[in-house]
Image: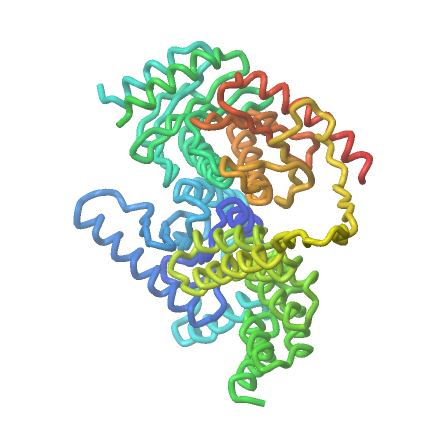
Length: 153
Length: 115
Length: 285
């Protein structure tokens, strides 16, 4: 498990221990990766983050068109693995969680401990102002630095 | 009143039962519930459902048929579970002084009705 | 050095804590460079002790190096982290088969088949183990006694020296009705006892592997629902009743009986067995 910010580690590790999730990715709603577990390649992390943020944005738009509040979670059931995609609010803005899990756990367990993690993240987030968001020309550099941190460099 | 609600109503009338719910066994999600304050139905569905799943695999590993009734007894109460047809499980959270025998009979009877 | 190993080595050098160590160590293992593979895998395992992939890889390297005990431990670690890991189940099955324990080998292969029904290699391995264990049983069947000679002299048939098998002392041997009792440690390994299946096969190890997970689930459920520490689990099946108790904080005991016996009686059997198990554990530790 790797996280960009230390305060994310304990809630995320607790979630991983309890849920038996195989892959987990936490990202901002714009697709910037905050933490990951289980991925072996940075390319996979980038791709998953981009796709996850895209799906999150699409479902928000769908909810808006339907005139309903935003969907909080989406679950895809697969033959061997399933996937939960859930948006949640943090003191640092809206984040998205992508969780891949297998038959060794259940969606009920994953959702239960995901919600607990969200509450713990809300409590653990430091109160100081976050750093100003990167200018577009620095985005590639920031992304590269984030990926290196997520893979332990 | 749906079948599930009828069933839950009977089970929760047993003295000491703090709440009862019907959950999807495979997913651990609540289908119907009738709970007192302080009983977390979502957690009960997910956790009890997961435990029952493990016990089904244990019974299978022992070459036996799947369980019909499970009691997890703890210091301050018990969790009772009765797997039902159609991948459902009836779960009750009871206090330490609950009439377990009566709750068990009601749950076994109810489990057969939840088809 | 081949291109792929070169590329992986470069990647690992640039990101020393990346998971590229998995691919690199596997590539080295496949080329027979076991020392190098072991070094890379150990480094990665040191950084990622909770990664089942890393333990699985380490086990394969140790197995290739001939350290079968080390390989067994590493695959057991992988299974603790990922109970459905077919690579580890196959590996342990292979080790059991080599040690001559076909029953345990088949048991692990069956679990692997359940986890991954589409894996042809598991079905093939199962067929092979069953075939060879039948052949072995046939070869060890004693030859029929020779027909008696017509001469008056007696025919002396040398008898093999009796083999004394020393069964490890079980805490349940002296218990009245001390059967169908299994004592399991926190890692899902059987400490004592046995559990015969209705068809006569032994299921103790298989059930033990499940019971560690049952205990963890029960602990979690009662904790999060505010019920405190769990004390017993009773399970009623149409063809058996089970009671689980905890002789110590680190062990679980399962008692199984016919459903004709009232559950409360089985609970008493379990409690008595748990007391015996606790005394036995204090003696053996």
